[in-house]
Length: 446
Image 1 (cartoon, rainbow, N blue to C red):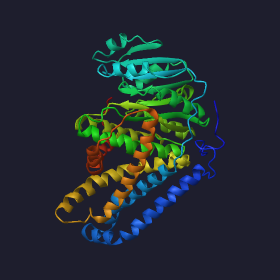
Image 2: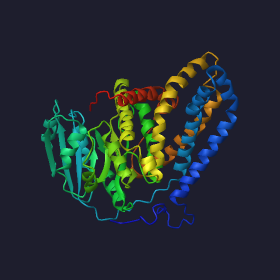
Image 3: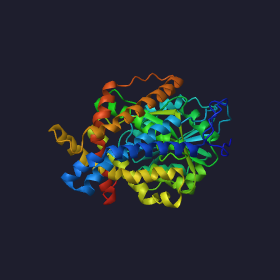
Image 4: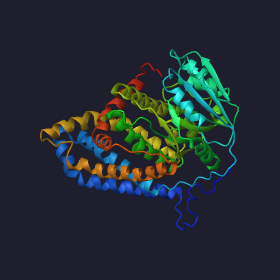
């Protein structure tokens, strides 16, 4: 395994580059920039805080503005400067590719799994590929579709329904390669996805436990809700993964497309039986001192929910997964205060941010429509320029990725408008429901 552990911040994409900024220095720069923005916003918000405090009291007035404007501005400015500083090492594809195993858990995926394996068949990977699929007690024709596939190295295991983590752990016992990757049954891989994911894995620092691939929407044009999700994956999720990877710890090696060291996953006893099994496993790696990377050119296309009900169920599950991670491994913040701990600390803020957005900002919008600008007014719009800048920078960066991979990707302008104006109005209340359900132990299901 090629090792760059001595200097993980080096930008190998241009060896003639004279200016080298270490990773920790980049973090300090982004944090100073974000803190300056926060202090500036606090200064100009003093009349706003005073005005709102007259209506709701000083403590609550300050907290509302803190969570609906000041902290979001800090986080967005930190994200912006981080992705501007992000220069990932160039990918060396001229390597000896190790044998790998593709591990998949499937539950009632008869409609999608055939397309998934058509893409697997077309993978441009020079090494040996083994495939292990665990059917988690499907009640549709998933097993029949799997039985009709004629793929070398494919092993299908029929298991009783026990949830995704249970199915993955059954499959993990069958993995015989030192590196394996997980994909979801509805994730269609780009032909170069596996090659690029493994190339990044073997060239990353030797303390890397996993590398996440880039998952984007595979059905963006179906309806308005999928058009908005296209921009969520394309700009928001991808930008956060770039930021976290830059600072040595992507917080989610998502099950839809990620590569892992087999021995390390077994060392963690596989995936825990929780809703956010991939989040909790990733945080276990970080807690043990391992690094989690990200490769933006290892692209997989996932089917996003096409209805508000489906979107609600998915994002509520993601919110519960974050709380599960905080409950099990939130002590990373003080037990292992390295760079990834900063982002775990940020996750502690999200329940408060979403709660204040739901119960203060959304009512504030209604008040503003009647000329009462107590909560939503000109100063809350300060975050919008930062958001547009993040979307613009990410559009440029992701366009380069799409061009490199030969992907024709026309994004919906209507989706962008609705993403910017209305997406959070759906997301925050959904997340609040997920947080409450997880905190009070509501029933879980896959």
